[in-house]
Image 1 (cartoon, rainbow, N blue to C red):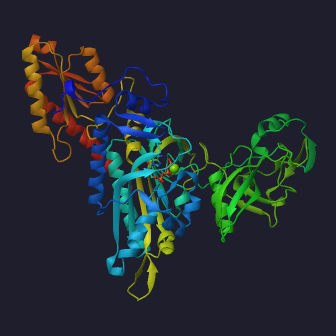
Image 2: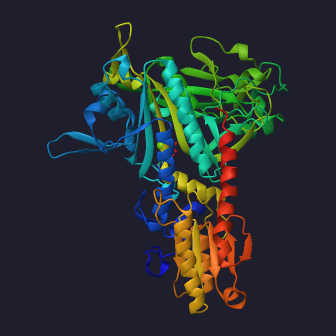
Length: 597
Ligand code: ATP
Ligand code: MG
């Protein structure tokens, strides 16, 4: 029985000072979560109910996609992580410690190592493949900036799945089936989301997509095409073409630009567009060589003045070019360079030139001399061993869609899911092989697929909340129905209790959540009861109060739309069923809009 009079719920009226975004504020105020220490949270009854409903959706879709549920340990031996080389690469996000026998361990930030070890132990022949395993399990990542509550916490629960196959085709099949399952999961949360091409980061691999929930406060930036639907993370969006610009200065000449340092200052001084100034940024890049040595190298990256350098693209390009691991890069701040007048001509080191520079006839570069720039430089002037052309700029609104040429839109969002084609990156290193039909031993071809469960809950709130509190579709609402007994008289309270029992018996599937109905029977004012129901995001609210005494009617309120109906208690179950069916239809429509069929 969920009767609020004896439930564990301590809602707050004031916004907590520590929270910046709406979902974090509301989750704290609605007493869904509680902070124990930086990035470490408890889930309380109301929050855990939402979590459990979402978890049930995820589990159902994973099972339907043919994946098998397992559970892997949180503590991993360092040896596995050393075998894949990630003991060092993962960096400070990985929590490392030593047990009483002096053995190094980590608290798993992800499970490729362990699950690949498992496959290496069990799989022998082509007959054992393909299969997909998944778990819903706790991770620890010592995030630099834990924030936004459970959106970016240090300890968090992830649904992670891993596919194992004997061919690229089998990988593609598993990947598509996870893509479709993810589409269904986020649709069932009634989320407005986009699937974007993504960078593969530290996990590595070839193909990758992120599921991004659109929200202005999101940490991810994406571009998408309003015409053909192509979408990508701005870190990844590969740009092939830019709007062509015509330069004002065509003659090659060194000119005094005085105190002007930034692209904007130089452009202003020379009365031209910022796109004519080449922006040169020097990074100190730390590499790890094949024999495990670390060394630093200064690398310059040059983009057209109206663009920004994208460090992830630089990092990926350099690791590929050198076939070594880039451990990190930071902006060079040494004193031997004339900042504001740096340029690619005569720079002592590797130079990366962004393709955008090919879309202007002449541009202006720093002269590597205090107070001077050189005008009239052509893309063709920059050639030699130390120059590399490539894609290094961050995509933004107005850029040309690489698929259809339309101007791109830009938006912010929250990454809730990420799918990767890993290939043989892990299986090769951990010896996860199988004997194929031709008798040859081959590495298993893998994929990995993650969903941040609590982050998804937070993102639903972030996208849908209003000034009264959380809004959820019934599929993940902490309580699908709340019966609010205003305690007008004994008879009305009896009707409220009866409605509560009726709704529970008639509407809900006990296999998922036995108690999806709430009875607010507290001795509180109507205002407090309405505010709490709205704050928690109770999807349908039935108020039994004065109008029952007066005219035998109760009020049914739909939290999402604010719609209110006065009906007799006998009509309540049917009416709510009607609303739920209507909502389910719109969710079905979302599911059907999946580009993969
Ligand atoms: P981010 O770029 O936001 O740090 P990530 O690329 O590190 O995410 P993955 O390694 O792909 O994330 O993890 C899979 C999913 O786990 C993510 O899509 C996200 O939903 C969730 N997740 C990752 N880090 C966190 C975190 N610190 N707190 C809560 N959820 C997280
Ligand atoms: Mg991360």
